[in-house]
Length: 365
Image (cartoon, rainbow, N blue to C red; front, top):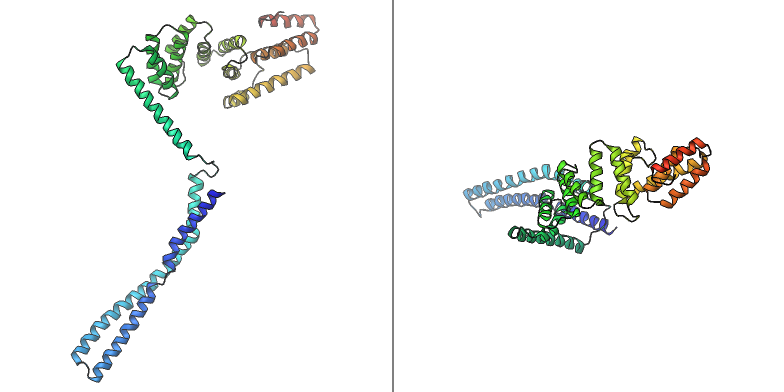
């Protein structure tokens, strides 16, 4: 509210600045007085000549000069009257109506009337922090130019460059970190990530090679597994990608920081273990944030559970529900669904299919 009051005050001041000179006494009045003075002077010259105070030649010369000035003043008065008055009226209308409308239009188009205030201290702090980071990066880069074998320095610099979006520089830094430090799975995985980022998110053969190197050193390296799955998806092998990601979730602790990312990837590829998704749902899921996507998945899973309570003879549905709970890391719900399935499926043949499916999931059939 205070902001709009300030804007209104500024607009009023601008309008006043335009109207002030227009409201002052016009030049026309001054010029009107000048013509009256010259006419009086002509009459006075004639009276002086008649009284014999001045000669005929002096009177004629005075009349010529005064007449010239009177003519000039009369022309100026006529021009000012014909031009200034319409212009003044137009300027007044623009100032009173046009100026506020134009200002409001520009602000609504280019401004942000609903944006909250961003304190000056915060802006200063943000700029200062960026400047400090840039200076620190420059200092580390200068140090590494003189000491290229400083593996620890490359370890420190590489992730900063990646976060700053300097992907090519990050790739170089990670390569040097791998070269000048001991072999470590995470270093190869980070290098692969940087190579993929530099390629616009595509897991290239070079990047995939680094992920494979990481898995040779540590078969449980999560980042390497995820990107290997992403490479499979990008190659059109969605089932293989789903298998890789599902295996990751099966082994992952519940608080794994990458769990939601992998769950969302499974939704994207429509991998087994999740309820079947329509093309429209998959497309919508791509644009969701992790929280909304997780909520959508859980809603679909609960919907499947509700349907199975009404139609408990659906073996494939029970298997999907158990898989879904396993993917979500909800082991207790998966065990409960398994027990409910065995109670609901009474036909011996279908029960055998159910048990076989559970064995394929790694559960006791």
